[in-house]
Image 1 (tube, rainbow, N blue to C red):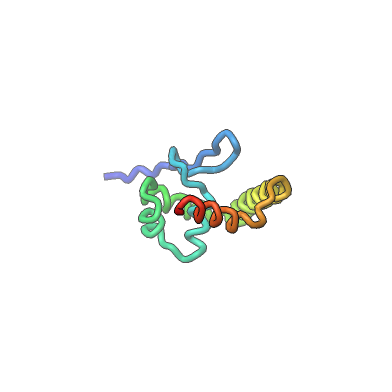
Image 2 (tube, rainbow, N blue to C red):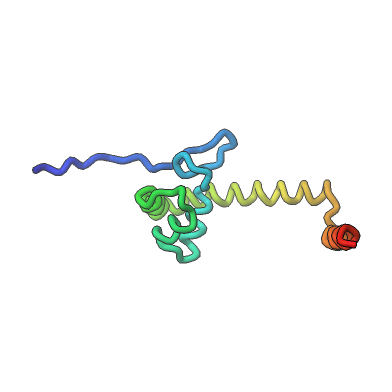
Length: 111
């Protein structure tokens, strides 16, 4: 028997916003890589995100380990964009005292 060695594609897709997701799931590349960097094994990642397939997680981790600089650059770009959005929203919406206002509303509603 001859073993056919085929090249497989990494199960990553960019959505319409440019966010890279795992296959057809809503789980992002950032989620998988962050879990891995926090010490989670592939099996643990699949346990945390049951829509993922173990083989896909191993393929993504292999892809990351072969291209860490490229993927870290992508992740840093998205972190920067996320921080910009947070800054924009915090300047638009005053969230000071929200907890106090919500607790006051809750107190009124219970009496």
